[in-house]
Figure (cartoon, rainbow, N blue to C red):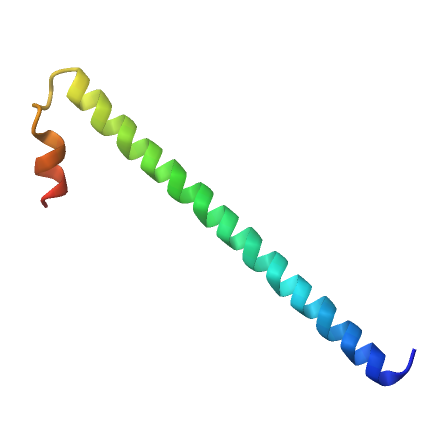
Length: 64
């Protein structure tokens, strides 16, 4: 393999590594955000269901 082909192979390998890392970072970020939203929804739902909060709770919280 000549030097030019080695450089081209290196560029392809580096680009693939960067893209793979970006994908893993996005996937981890998405999983974390889903977990956060689930936890918030559960918290609001539990407090609304048990009567601690009234029917306008979500409207009041979202307006702050």
